[in-house]
Amino acid sequence: MSKKIIVIGGSAAGPKAAAKARRMDEFAEITMFQKGPDLSMASCGFPYFVGGFFDDRNKLLCTPTGVVRDPQFYWNAKGIKAIVNTEITRINRENKTVEFTNIETGESGVEGYDKLVIATGATPNMPPLPGINLKGISTLQSMQDADYLRKVRDEGHIKKAVVIGGGLIGLETLEALHLAGIELTLIELLPQLLTFLDWKIAKIVEKYLKTKANVITENGVAEFIGENGKLIAVKLQNGTEIPCELAVVAIGVRPNIKLAKEAGLDIGELGGIKVDEFMQTSDPDIYAAGDCCEIKNLITGKNVLAPYGDLANLEGRVIGENIVKGNKVKFPGTIQTGICKLFDYGVGITGLSEARVKETEIDYIKVVNASPDKPGFMDGKLLITKLIAERSTGRILGVQCIGPGDVSKQLAIWATAIKGDLTIDDMVNNDLPYAPPFSLAIDHSIATAHLIQNKRDGIFEGISALDLKEKLDRGDDMYILDTRGPDEFEQTRLGIGERLIPIGLLRKRLNELPQDKSKEIITYCKISLRGYEAAVLLKAHGYTNVKVLEGGIAAWPFAFEK
Image (cartoon, one colour):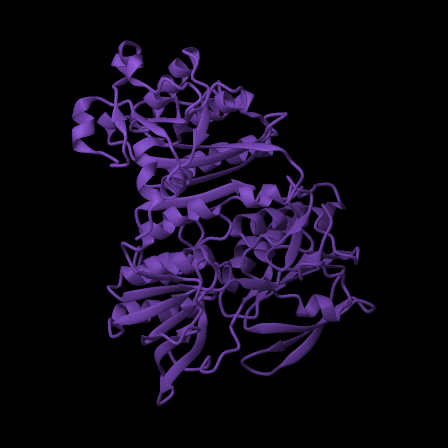
C-alpha cells in the first residue's frame, strides 16, 4: 500500500519536501495544498521584479529551464497533486486527516495522511495603528504584493512613498522604489538599521543610504492619515507628518503557527513550531520546515527564528527523505548567514555579531579590515569586514562585510569556515584561487585573518575610526601619525592634528616623535598596512602605547554622521 503524504504550503520548503519525497518513493501518494494561487514563488526576488530588474513575473515561478511551476507542471513532471487556492483549516491528529476549503468556491473536504508536512511560512507584522487599512498601504510578502508594487512602478503616478522598517526587506524595497523615481523616506523605530549588524557597521550602511533617501531612526509611525480612503501622509511619534501616497510596511514577520498550535503541537519560546534535528515535530508523523519553525543556532546552541529561503529549501529536502526512509538525515541548524544588495553595496553577515557574542560567556577578539577586493589596476572596490573570533582557540564566531566590493564571495568563504569549525590559524594560509580580475594576491579574507592573528598575538593593537573620533571629541592627548607619502597627504588629509612622516623615512625621523614613550600614538595610512608596519617599528623602539587605525583613511569617513 502506497504511503499518503500531505504537504501544507507551496512556497519553498513545502515543494522541496514534496519533490524530494517523490525522488525517494515513486509510488507515494503526494498532495500539496497551497492557500494562494501561485506555487514555488522565488519570494526573495520580489524586490527585483518590483524594481524592474526583469519584467516577466513568471520568472519568479519558473524552473531553471523556464517552465512555470503550476499544478500541471507538478503533476506531469513530478507526479505530485498540487491544489491551489485551498486553505487547510484543521489538522486532526487522532484521525490523521486534514480539513480543507477552496477559497474561490467554498467547497470543503477531508484528506487522510500517513505523514504530514507543515510549511505554512510566516505572516508579515502589521502595526495596529489608526488608518492601517487605507488604500496605499502594502507589504512585500506575497506575489500579490509584488504585482501591486510593480504596477505602482509601471504607472508612475506615485511621487512620494515611505518604507517602514530598516531590515532586509525594507532596504530591498527601498531600492526597488528608488529605481521607479519615487521620493522616499525610510522610517525605523530602533536606533539603527539592520539590527543583525553591530551598531558601527550599521551606521556605515545608514550613511550610505542617506545619499539615496531620507532616513529616520529612533522614531516610529503613530498614525496613517487618509483622505477619501486613500493614504496621504504618515504621522510619526514625534508629531512630524510625512506626505506620501504609498507606505510599504516591512517590520518583520512572525511564524504562521495557527494550524500547528490548534493541533496541539509543541511551540517554542520564540513562537515557532518546535522541531528536532530531523525536522520532526512533537508528533512523530508530522514534520515542519521553513519560516514557521524554530531551529538551532550552531554557535550558541539556542533556538532562533531564521526566515531565509535557502534554509527553507534545505530543511524541506531533509524532510522529504525522512518521511519516506525514516529519520536518516539531519538538519543540524544555522549560522544565520544573510546578505542583501543595496544599490551599489553588498551588506551581509554570517555567524554572530559582536552584540550577540556579548550575550555569551565567550572571551573574544575583533578586527576591522577596510581594503579592496581586487588590485587597483583591476578597478578594485572597497570592502569593510569585521571579524570576531574566540581569543583562546581562534574559533571564528562571526563576520560582517559591507561595501561596493564582492561581499558575497567574502561571506561565502567565512560561512564555510564557520560551518567547518575553522580557526583564524586555519585561515591565514587558506589556499584560495588568485588572479587579478578576481582577487588580491592575498585575498581580503586572508588579510583579515592575518590582522586578527597579529592582534591576538600582541603584535599590534587596533582602534576603530569611531573610537578614535570619540577620543578626539573628548580631547584625549594623542600623537596621530600619518605614514603615507607627501603626494597622498596633499590629496587627502583627515585634519585631526596628524603629523606626516612617510613610512620610508620613519626610522630617520624617530627623534620627532614624543620623548615620552608611554604616550598614546595612533598610526595609519590609506588602509593601515603601512600604519601597521609603523606600529611594529615604534614598538621595537620602545613605544608602549601604539594603536593602528583599523581600515585607515578608507574607514575614516564612516566615523561621521550626515
